[in-house]
Image (cartoon, rainbow, N blue to C red; front, top):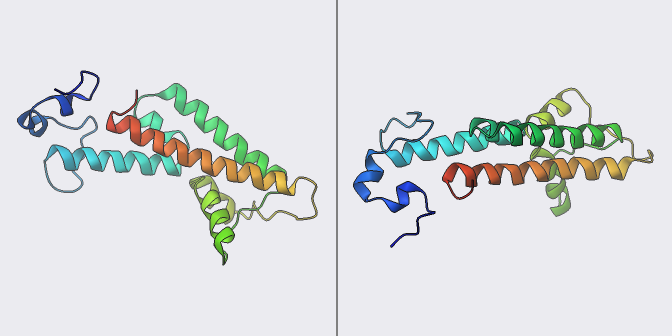
Length: 158
């Protein structure tokens, strides 16, 4: 017996699952099965959540969270740039990769900042390390928001 708090597709029979449609049904893969539509929607929602902080929650109808998360991540990003933080590219070594990963998790603001040369930073500035920390935190927070979006879209979390 499956507990009542599981999503409906887990509680029902296999025929019920086949007959259901995903909430945001997009036939991008070319099949009409529930699983492929549902997974394509989850993947597209997670990509949107990565590119624009809070967009995944907005797509899922949680607009208050979306606004809060967008403002939080963008504020961390702006403070990091204001304090002379650096938007790192891919550099050799483990720590070079970790800095790049933390920065690229910010999504579209990272690419915009690199394009407009915002994150050049100055190592002599008093806020240089703080700026880098704010930028890392913005990226890692956004990656946690993508995971949260994934859990909500899969029905694991409300």
